[in-house]
Amino acid sequence: MITTNQVWQIMNKLFPENASMPYNELIGDISCIIYRNDIFECGDKTIRSKHIDIEFSFGECYEIPQDTPVFQFICNICNLSLPEETQEFIIYQK
Image (cartoon, rainbow, N blue to C red; front, side, top):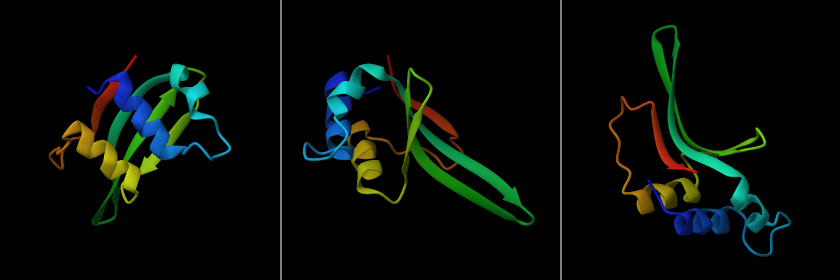
């Protein structure tokens, strides 16, 4: 699990100070941050969708795809190296 300070760092990466969305107003509304590895079977192929979801108390969710720098940043601050089979891992919970 990460600290509130690290959540601030993540939000700062997602919404830099010059962005139109004031992330400091959203910090208190974050209920959890979850790593997800969605696995879909499509015929004889297996499709994996790794992402990190920031879930807010008002019901919305912000998805961070695996191919973004913020995803890598979160994995680095968490020392996150999960096995391929891991489908869900809670990174932060209020």
